[in-house]
Amino acid sequence: MINNKTAFRHELISAWCGPAFLITFVVFWGIIGQNLPNPSPALSATELAARYAENLSAIRLGFIVSLITVVLYLPWTALLSAQMERIEGGFPVMAKLQLLGGGLTVMVVSFSAMFWVAAAFRPEQSPEITRMLSDLGWLCIDLQYACTTLQMIAAALVGLADKRSVPLFPRWVCYVTIWCGLSFLPASFTGVLKTGPFAWDGLLSYYIPYACWLGWFLIASTCMIKEVNRRKLVAETAENSSLVTSHA
Amino acid sequence: MNSTVKTDQGHRAEEGIWIFIFADMCMFGIFFITFMYERLKSPALYIESQLQLNQALGMINTLVLLISSWFVVLATRALHRGRPKYSSLFLGLAFFCGAVFVVNKVIEYSEKIEQGISILTNDFFMFYYVLTGIHLAHVLGGMVVLFVLMRKLKNSSFQKTGMSTVEGGAIYWHMVDLLWILIFPLIYFLR
Image (cartoon, rainbow over all chains, first blue to last red; front, side, top):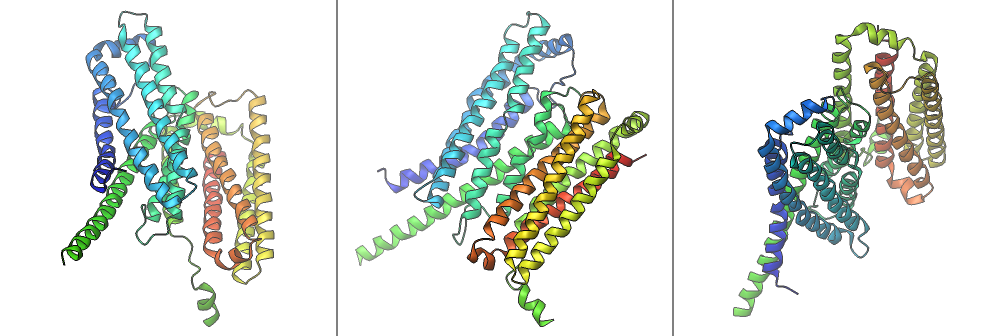
């Protein structure tokens, strides 16, 4: 086994991957990738191809970098699983479910960004092809949210069952988590609608669910960093007192 | 007075449920505001489309949900009074009402689809399907909650300690009812 100090260092690095993911996602996927606001599904093929042509370098940079930084979600997910296992004990089903959900979330986000890199790959191609690839990217990310919902619900259920005096997640965080996970539900309508608030550029299928997801991620990251620091402090105090006694 | 204090001791509903409900109501609040905003742009289309809805089925469903809420109240009251068997029975009746609501909704949807009205027909029907669909998901979720509570009430230790859990479930079910009471006039009747 690796020593305590190294273990805590790994845990803290994983925990801080959370905020790092959040910032890089908003900057590269959102701002540089031209997803704030994102392209409407109602755009004609030529309009969409023109949007790609005008922002070619930004879109390429944004999504290619996103495809690297999205994996910051993985160490964070692994840490959360380890923290959940500690609560669950010998049979950590929910911790494993959370791990799967988080891992697959990364694949969903990655594949959609990859489709957009592909859409920008040959700007001279026919506009219909560009639109098809852009559509694939959006449908990929908006219809496959259920993996993330499961990840969030698993974390919330274990959080609610955490009977320690200072739990990993306060109870209100658990309820917010379940609700945020379910807020993706309207995004399923993106598979059919091209205009309005439930289309993939709409308030209720895009801005609110994505904000809820990232908001949950920020709250959970904060709780996780605090939990690691609490255990670290206890371990250090125990070590110091044992040093004192051995010297005496 | 004394007896109320006694029965209420340690029976406060789970606080977190209120956060969940607050968030959910905010979400539906935004749904309603967007609906009204879009409706202002083309009121004629909305009114004309609205006439194609089956108001009678909507009305029946409103009554069914109101009755189910009453059963849920009776269920929590029965548990307060130490009668878990009745509590379980009332939860079962509320569950049955939920099932009637779902069947009714399926009939309503299939009627619309037979008439060739889909989510893509126009903006009004987009809202109709989305709002009632998301509400239906809430009803189904609520039925799962009622069913789980019914099963748990068979357990004698839960009969003593489960009050706050049952109240949490009851509060959620009332919210589902309340949301329908807002959706129903907004979509079926607003002129």
